[in-house]
Amino acid sequence: MKLVRAWALGVLAVLLTGRPVLAQAAYTVEQASPPIHTRGVPVMVAYTPPEPLPHNAAMLRVQVQLSGQTRVPVQTRVCVDLQAKQCMEVNGASATTSRFYGIPANRPVYLVYTVPGEGSLNPNVYVRGSVTVWYGRASLPSSRSSAVRP
Image (cartoon, rainbow, N blue to C red; front, side, top):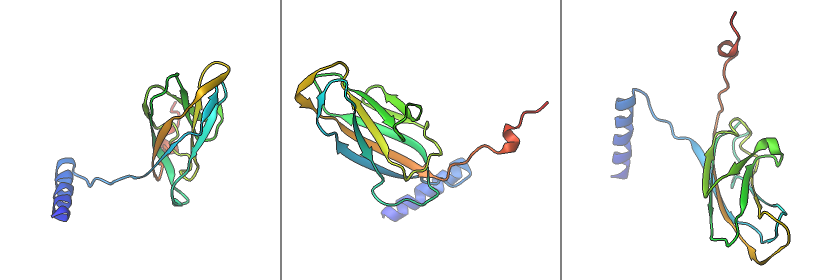
């Protein structure tokens, strides 16, 4: 019955759009941060693919979801190489971005947590993060379409 329903939905998608709908591959990793015990000191958590991905797989989209109640504000950045130019602030409990489009999908994605200020935290703060990476073959604009015309 499920196979028939999936087939019917696929046929309906082709009829409505005129072309087949292709699913994108993705992986999701969830984990809690180590204890955040000092304000102003970043804590990094690596989210690595759970299994090897094709060598030519590229990131298409990244989604971050944060959970857990904290008594203090926690600033969060999502990064792919821990350099400022490859990071993005996460405002709120979730974010979805295509900013890392084309970056090799075998790289880990990092969540970097920082409690602003100085001094120790007692009790420690923990954040639970979930990272979903959609990956596939990234298409780059052709040189013909990006050429400057006189």
